[in-house]
Length: 420
Ligand code: AMP
Image (tube, rainbow, N blue to C red; front, side, top):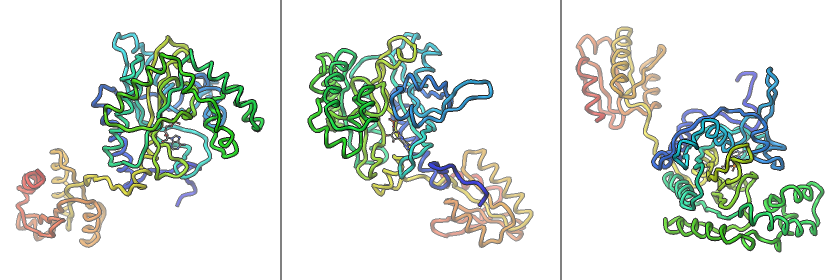
């Protein structure tokens, strides 16, 4: 061990487990790639104001959880705690929304940083795959994203998850509800912090996880009862489209989520095998975000799915992903000359697209075969002085254990044909 450890709240992704993370990222991205979403990548840090204005001044993310720093040049930056605001910033900056092809549909994959209290499933560095559809107000777009997330989870074999769905209204009906909720909250027995929150962002009080707060919220007014006709019709259509796609969901009139920018459709994917950190993904419509960061009105919708928690969900359901072994052929030389010959064969195999590896360092047959085993290779190619003198190498089938001599000049073609 070195003097250093991974910082608190972080962990390293190491082989072989890291293969699972890559597979999860890939599984989430696949339905997006297949549905017109293009890949976008933004920097890991942004001007701190982007998040303050975008995510919201009263959110935990902005007030408590951001990694903020000042550069040597005097810029105030923050490691990104989420990627929706950065994506929108990038789309606006590049004028993608003016290309006359709305919605702009993009997906991303990457690290997020939040200074949270670490526990299982909650880290200070974690990874999300996200999708954003920018510049269109269409219930089919909200439905598309929910259906694609469902498809991603199901393609991994997950089934013990639920979709919670709500509408947060729009700038017509939300303020009316907000005032009604505030009235209600002022009458409760709440601590000072929570009362202050009730003044700044009362909807977030509904999200308070504390029992002492939750038990007072039983009679809280529900946004559902305040939605304007347009929001009601919009929400009803989203529900119908999802239902028609065979995706089941639960209406959750108290679902608000921790970011300020959501309007209308909001949803969360929760997994029932994860304990307290049960949200594996979430998202919704953010029709006002563009204007909040100085852009034009651009109604948009998106989601982010947590890669770390999706991996935990797989473990909770006992799902072993069928990951094809990365190495097909493992070469084991038993003499100096064999090292040169087999190294050349491995290079040739690789150039022909066959995944091949080599026993490096000076090793005896036994420990080299152990490496071959561990690599998961389907075949081992073994050669010593005597083999080469006869112009052959030994081809061992690692499944059956069967071993045959093959001409040195035929081995590459033979392996290619065996591996199909
Ligand atoms: P959010 O950006 O807060 O809507 O979160 C979207 C998803 O990211 C969540 O459903 C989680 O799966 C994941 N996530 C959020 N915060 C964390 C964290 N601190 N550690 C691990 N995963 C997280």
